[in-house]
Image 1 (tube, one colour):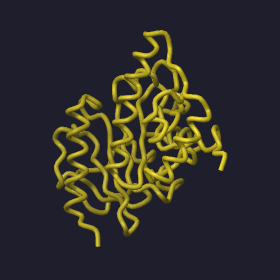
Image 2: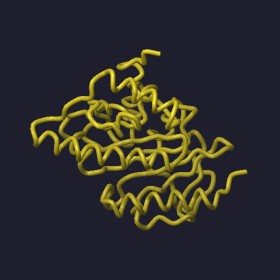
Image 3: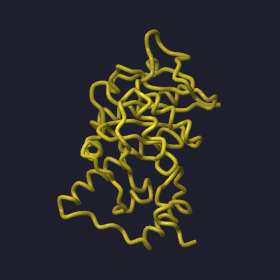
Image 4: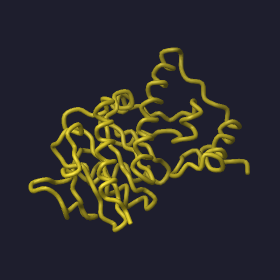
Length: 230
């Protein structure tokens, strides 16, 4: 049986870390978790992630309707994006949306992070695509991200920010950390003349390690781009 109190505390902890790291400002960003009964816990709209507490979270159904919550509280306006992730990916139980500055810099510049140049990033998440522009709070964003969710756990949202998913909330949060660090390293590499991609033979070895040694969950685009020789 799930410990709802522990899950709520974890959501709050992730929200506070996001704010402390400067990934969100004002009321930016949102976090959600899928519960065992098919309902969801989500951060409410209009509240800074630095001020999130367990009682402020709302419990919703798969239509975004509030089932439990303080009077007047409702889920983030981006909840449609979260719900689309859960619909497309039964393996996903945690979703994080934020605006980490360097990664979001790539998003607003219209640039993906579609390269295999850092060992840890190759293993953890693979290349990161840039999804088409969508108007926030509308169905344009869910429609824009849907085609990418089958092969990616990390997305850049054009002119917007970043989205990560995971088998649990901490996995989704860690992927956002990995994304932002990789974006910083990629930018530095660009200033130094450009990143050098890892040879395909070595990428295949890393992909095998991902599955057979590190036991990483989720999806990875590299299995299509760099198929294993096995």
